Image (cartoon, rainbow, N blue to C red):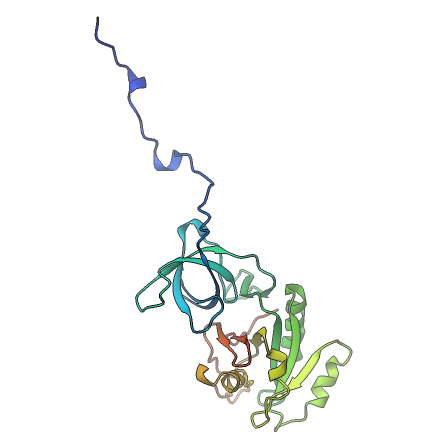
Length: 262
């Protein structure tokens, strides 16, 4: 019996990486724990497991998610080391459907419109009545963004010791808009009930008292506060969006001072 002759069909050729067939099947990760994203910092996401402020882990984005954007407020599924110990890293393996979004428009520093917060219930627009003077432009743009993204808007007027709130508030009298005040020395009785058991985004120019309000609502937050310059503009103090738990239930999301928005 003659030996079998071999030809090129007997040689297994491994395809190059670029030509290999790729499966679209992704692992389901049925054991993934649900969490809420509370911080974002250079490719690392701080997450509250089960929305419990005391149960936090740091996670990276799993490779199968590609460049899927993940922002503060996103509901995510997490696997891996969920101990929360220092130097441990879990993996975000899925991002839930977003119920609401708050978008920032493109500007000179960023030509792309971006979602900055997801799944918030309402938008608290913080406006000073003086020092710096109030600007209707931010309120108008924020209202448009809130309605477009599915958030309920609230107007919060600060620095009531420097000017009465009625003249500025009257400009929005025809709108179905909740308006409240939060002076530095005023009790928060009017503001706090509006935030209870809600996820609320705080938005305002630097120097209007937004960080001061956050520190009063969440004393342990210790957010930096800024002074107003001699040209009437605040110095930016918040540099990253962060979700902070309220003792009465719910979360407030502090955003950086935004120059271009809406």
